[in-house]
Length: 494
Image (tube, rainbow, N blue to C red; front, side, top):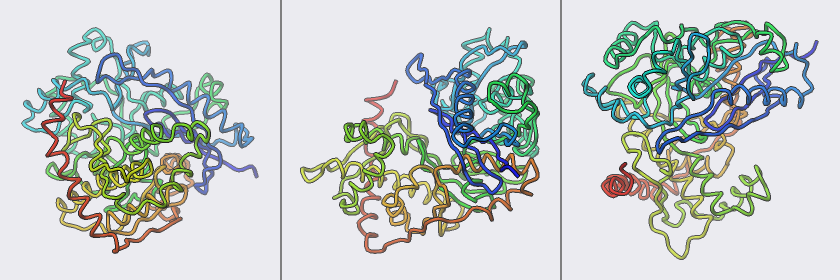
């Protein structure tokens, strides 16, 4: 019998990874295709929705060709995507404007207004509802013409099937939880947004429809292939890390980064942000704006010639380069805020190197950035533990950064807990997304079964010999932003 696969699409901010995943959860073929950002004004970040579908078409055809897979071997499709996009479609299904993506910061005024109306401080310029308010106030013709606001996942499902539906994890309008629905209703009323302009809700494992003839031709697949609800990239990573159960914890190290845990409910005084996982569980997320984005910037600046020569193998070279750098990078501290930071910091924060001496070379700068990202995550972890009154005694780490032995040992030493790396950590999002389709197909029963299928590949344990050094640097690291806050505001406040 020919092997059966699920086509899984992992959509980030800069590109899509198309993966063919077999029914054992193994990634058998991968192809990536990039797309660009559009910055019409400072702080504005958009993307052309057509670029997403074009990237899907190119990436899946390349993945099929690499493995020489027949179209009929693809039994299901699911998308795992960046969240909080705003894509307006009119009543003829024409896209009226670019996707205003999660990174966009144009809605500071609207966020302040919404905070005042709701008597809260949780809204910020990148939040979903303030950006919708901005569209209504600054593009009234587009808002009026909009029949449905889609985000990236619902747009891709629509392109694939002709059906409009938003999956539970990417939805910010509807909920099957009464308390959460009341919260959404209060926001929508305060923001004066029309609820009928948003598509209906589906579960990540629910079939939305089959590939249309046109979509099947463009993707090189079979008409009628089932497309499932899919999920946001954060829940997809949790599934792929084997962290779907209550109180399970993981860290993701990609372009951005986060610490996340699964909880039974949302609590206003705990956590930085939430994303629904399923009908009974919520994801509590403590995010950092830049992880590998900062590291990649530094590699490009300090290792430009080697990067041009080695391409993707530059990371292996870097890991070997920094082997000789002692823990603590000779007291060099790096704050990895190259794109600003989320609360409790601010967009005005920027990257800092502190305590540079003539003993430091480019290796130390790279090592310090890796340690700085670990410091950020320790900060998030400590805040979480203080809020919930419960210690996190181990952590799973996935994403591209989890492939670095050196970085993961730093993580264990700085967090002071064991760090576990699941198999295929680079593809956790693709694997998690694929399981949404496999559960829908009946290949797996539920996410609990998926957890048991995710095996640990490597383990890193805390080395007490470096505790004093890292504690000293961490406490200085936490003082950086309060000390520099006013300077950042003077330099960078718009």
